[in-house]
Image (cartoon, rainbow, N blue to C red; front, side, top):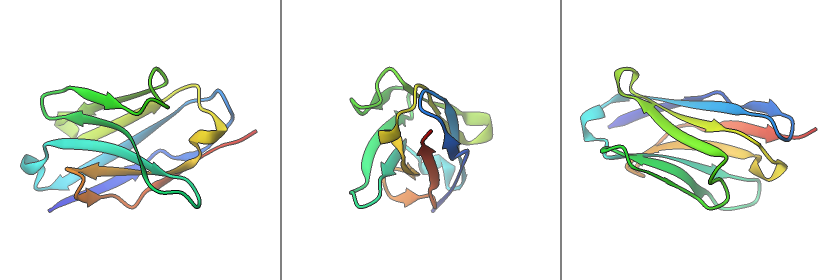
Length: 112
């Protein structure tokens, strides 16, 4: 089992930036892919970005060029740097390991 704890959410104005963190513990060796997903009110959870064990990354079209996923293996932590935020980025952001283990989520609200 892998335990995940997200942090870094909050309220930001349009055009602003936030960095989310996801700290992993437990069976770290079993993690092949770490991903970020988001769920807006009344909508289904959607893929945002992921990073594979070898280092390759993937992004949803809606965030390409604005969001960057990265990791610090020494800290067992994955980050999501979010720039040029838009109101439509407002959602609860979830971290996932192998799309099986999930964190509790962190709220991101983009509003003036």
